[in-house]
Image (cartoon, rainbow, N blue to C red; front, top):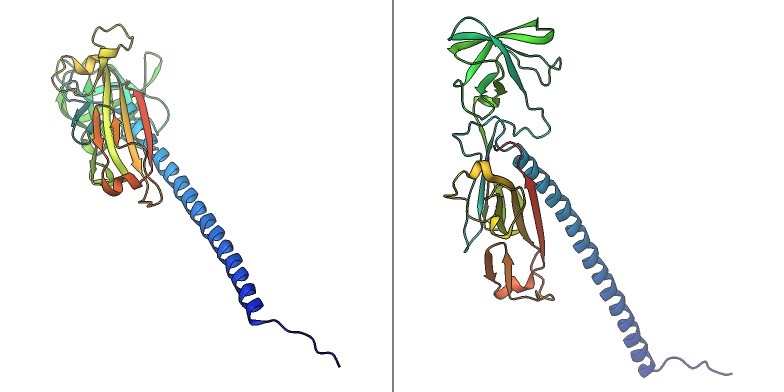
Length: 303
């Protein structure tokens, strides 16, 4: 009778060693793939959040100055070379996804002082002025004709072959044909203020975007009014610039976003320059990845 030879202890140890190496390799590959997938998912979410945030900032900049008297600063900001900037915008049109409403005066009733006026009717309730609306009347140069008025009644009429409304308001005023009428939501001019605390960008007092390391603002001020952007016309501090509102052409917002701490990664530069601010990365700050975003918007309602 012949006996089959079994595994020796040495062979068993070698087999177990090879198996453990294979299992370790599989685990390492799996862990790396999971880490890559998690990172890609985080980047995708971040990209979506940033894009949405930039769209809102763009809308706020486009609408800044809408329905705002020239006596109010529609665009202002605080520049900090040793920290993040802040940006403050004012408008009666900060209605994300909504419709701004305005019209113009076709005629007024009675003499110098009146509480009735005729305005253009758009035949679209989403755009037309309604009873209960608070309105402000301004010239084309944004000089205020009246304080805030409340519409108490509205009658559809035809004036000089144009669709119109006869509006009655709660106080007397003095205006003239051609002046503009803006609806003021909530009865006051709205503000969108952007500022950074820790790693969170706030819009007014609400958390707006997280993972932000730096927030900077610059302005194109057309100092010689030739509509050509020149090197010296990129301004970081708008305070004290004469006729700032008339000369302002665009606003640029620059963001630096950071990812979580990754001990396996070292940022290649020891310093970051964003607009007019340069800061040094120390400690674990070097173990975070960064993405840079810039948005420049031509302001259209400031002047």
